[in-house]
Image 1 (cartoon, helix red, strand yellow):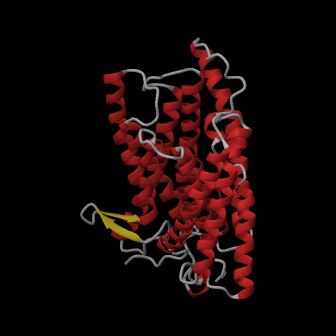
Image 2 (cartoon, rainbow, N blue to C red):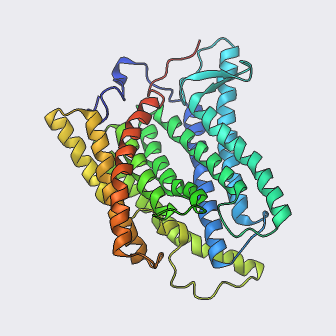
Image 3 (cartoon, one colour):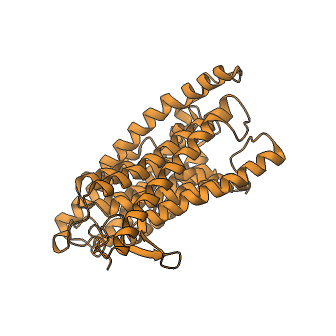
Length: 378
């Protein structure tokens, strides 16, 4: 066991049977991840469309990406559930993929835990899509993110992304499982602050987006590093986030403009100097925090410190780095023109308790992830 993770978080996989490495296990896991990636692209495109062109209706190409991604994750999850169910009914050992198999729907289906979570999120997304369609039918154009139907959709997407991380965590004794975590974590880091849009109607001392980035960024970075429990894991996650940010930075404005041109719609005036909306709120300086996290974990291994305390400290350090740099990042990219010294100081101060909480929860959540080698259900 790598002692950079909490002592009782990651069991010694050498004492367990290896997780399933079949084609079904790999296709199912990557299918769920691909669905979340397509959904994220759709979200970034849709947000950019709102900012560059204006309100939209339910039936748009960005929305098609949103629903297609969720459907892809849902069908991939369903396929794995059926594989596990057929194995169980045939009296064969259930493949150890995606987490502990559990019985659902009156024990009629055998669902690996990660796929059950991902599939439930996808199903809820499609269900709440009907609510969004009804919302559009009543109110027409949609100009904001924090409508009830949107908040429900965002929660559903988040559930699918959590399921994706769980699925790959169950295979982190495999190289492809570790690679999946490195990619799944940045996708959720990018998306998770959108959840805080639901708080925009409240009078908060700090912008809700800043709160989301300062909390979820450290939580997910430390969680990923602790789950992988390997040197360089945090840096790999931060680099993957940077690559994703660069991709969305190019794609989002290009796709919005190309789609508007195809529909014969004009772009709003003065958007040329604006940073792309979603990529601009991805924490650019998370790599600095990742290096610090690696240093803390290295010290824990070298000095034999309590790993649980290191996880909390890693969350604190990451939170302070993100809290200090994120308002400056918004000013740097000209995305948020009201950044003042008071906002920077307040963001950094708020990051202290949020970072500690993020580190604490990261340690607890890693313990809740499926074991990297799951015993077959009988």
